[in-house]
Image (cartoon, rainbow, N blue to C red; front, top):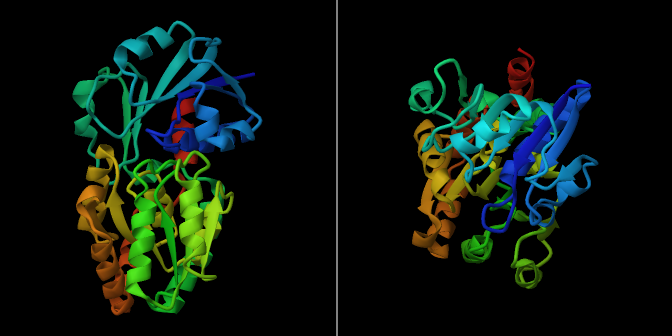
Length: 330
């Protein structure tokens, strides 16, 4: 039986995005008959509870079995680590989106929209395959399954905003979510709001109190398994520029984007240039009043909302796992 090991971590500081996209690829490969194992730090299961309930074996990073493929999705690892992994792995696949260090891999995947193959050519072995762009984004099957209905609903709504989704990633250590909630209060619009947070968010209790004070039209979802459904029924998202960017794009969801990590700057700039999002910039430089004003402007301009949806849906179709599988099997 073929074995694939995923070397990834999650924490309050780095969020859960690395683990979540590896879980998507693991689920896909499991359906093809592969045995999947995760090698993670002790904090990972707390910050990414979805891994704990997935049923996959989880081992310490220094306890690695022999495997056919190792997938490395970790900003703290580079070529020297990956060379060491070759002692137990026949093939190394690296998932990255920084293009800032060398890798010893057979396949390099960077799902950043607008990323060029040439950005990695000096950083990987000469014979390595480089896969770039949102066509390789690792999305769970439910996003692709809901895509057609979500796009049809958006076209029928003609850009009117009745429901918004707030999602700042699994951890949100700076509690940007609280600032966005303040902006919703300031905007004073007749809308329903869904707020999503991960179980590793250190501000859960204060967010619960804040949301409770805002009335019955604001709903709080912690570790929700229904992210795709929440995105499909939303008319606008206010969110970060991490891996959820491709989930929103797949469902054609327009976004007010807020940068909360350095690696999101390129993503935010490229999506803004495409017209799929409005990039509000770095979270520390944005006031609640700025978000409120942007929200009010879109509420009054449904044509722009509709155009953003049309631009977003062209970026990602949700078939990334199947595309990457071909290079795992090659």
